[in-house]
Image (cartoon, rainbow, N blue to C red; front, side, top):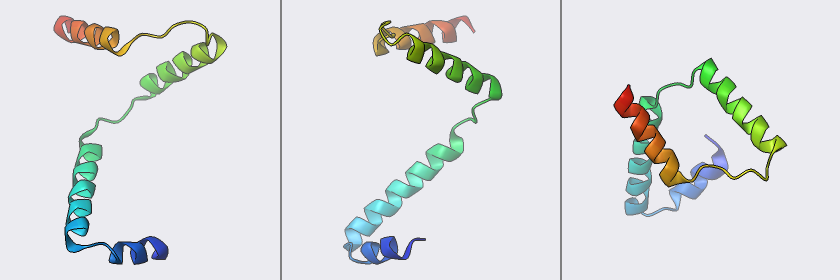
Length: 77
């Protein structure tokens, strides 16, 4: 651990240290349970990013539409 960060952490109150510890545990748990990204998914993301960079004027899909699409796909699968 970085010595400077450790020194700064020592100045936190007990409640702040406890809250930080709990937040770190939640963060670590969520990272551990997240499925790894496959190489095919990485390729798709790279392709989409390249398309967006080549055509920035094209509108994207809004969150509500994306959510609807994902839910629809989940029901089909």
